[in-house]
Length: 313
Ligand code: AVI
Image 1 (tube, rainbow, N blue to C red):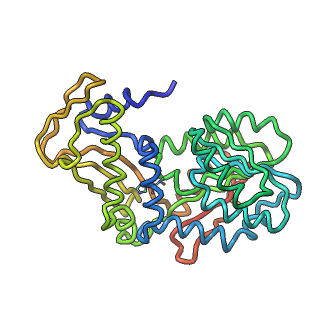
Image 2: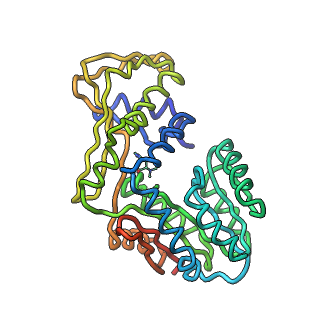
Image 3: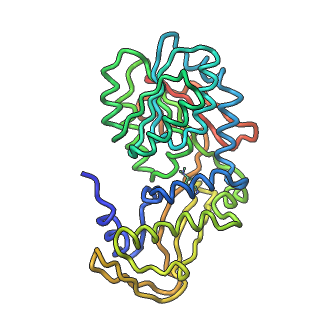
């Protein structure tokens, strides 16, 4: 069984090196802030991936090479903005497919379905709520091939071991004809990467501090957000952006529902997120070591982002 929010908060804040898991960013408020991040000029990832889908949809589907009905399965679909570009292409070309977005949030799925049907009334869509792998296991029973999308550089939020485990599970659940399209942010000029995670408007800061807000509302925490700042750091040698909440003063914060008082030194940090950048070779190594083979990398014009297509060995 997965840990609960309170268990993870307690473990993370009682540790010598404090941390909070980035998966907890995405409550309703956090998801809204993430939409704002995706609209930032400095957060280039979204536009790069959108450009790839808009301009290379045909090349991608030629490489996928399905000639019967297939399932387009998306792991963690969010607002479906980028996928819409692929869907628009497929519908235009009258290609027969069913879109199956998988999300842990029923509400997110309902909104996505409603939005997409407004845009594309003829779309066949079967949104599924639950665990990615339980649903992929179910889908293994189907005869039709699947194109599985894991886009948005979500893989970057997993540590090396967790990413390897995730790809290995995906690979196990793919049927022999299935394909995986994975969207990954690439290593590039460190100045560009740093700016994406440190915007002038303070939106990424608000995204991080929302974790403390969540603890306040859900666990009766007493964090005063004015006493905390945000810091992110990109190490171009290993491709890791690491993000932190910083305590601006020495303070003790009560978390009522956990019956604990958390002590902070002035300048002490809480690690909140890893956003790893890859290069093509590293990505191929990670994925090909788990029984998949590269078909092609589709990159944007600036070479900032890749959507890479893999098949089973
Ligand atoms: C969702 N994920 C890929 C984003 C990223 O770039 O790591 C989340 C994010 N964190 C700060 N800005 C955006």
